[in-house]
Amino acid sequence: MKGSKTINVAIFASGKGSNAKKIIEYFANHSFVKISLIVCNNSRAVVLEIASENGIPVLLIEKNQFKENGYLASLQKHKINFIVLAGFLWKIPVVLIDKYPGSIVNIHPALLPDYGGKGMYGMAVHNAVVSNKEKFSGITIHFVDEKYDHGKIILQEKVAIAGDETPESLAEKIHVLEHKWYPRAIEKVLNEYANTERVV
Ligand code: GRF
Image (cartoon, rainbow, N blue to C red; front, side):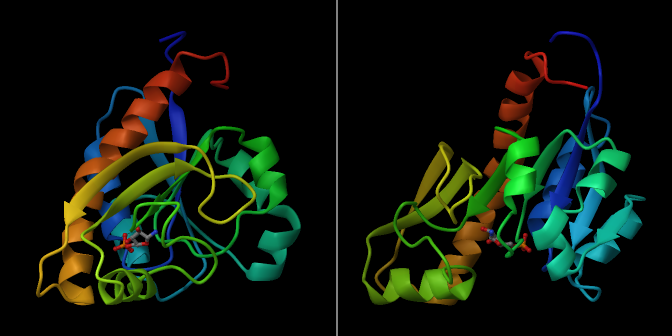
């Protein structure tokens, strides 16, 4: 690793935050990765409690301003180097894609490019996978670009779908995979990031 500077990570999450929680736990006491900010668009989201329990500052955001400037100034104030999306549904504005090249990742609860795109999130994904009688589903961790669920794939993990699978049972299986693999995939990307000159 070039230098020994901390990489400050912002997690964008607006729901239950189970992935955010696992990521926070994984990187607690990490040698060079710090979860420095939770960005959220829902003042009642459970992830806010997780942030508070872990002493992580929260940035509550509003849609028009997010579209306009991506809250870039606030992210810079917190010296954010890297962004992790974990259950964040708004499209990331170009201003952030440009300022964080190769430094925004997302997790999708299916095997992209299948079952991705606008409107494909949460139970809508698992409902579609089960009703199409797919044999497998899984998770996709990928870089974020200007299109929904489109950037370069970092990692995919598969899970078999049982004959009597329901969307709910599939959602549980997928969450287990997400919790295991997302923190590890982020660490792998951040190891590579740390070996570039981009750390500020
Ligand atoms: C996850 O299933 C993830 O794939 C998707 O949003 C969900 C977030 O779940 N992007 P949680 O809030 O982390 O429990």
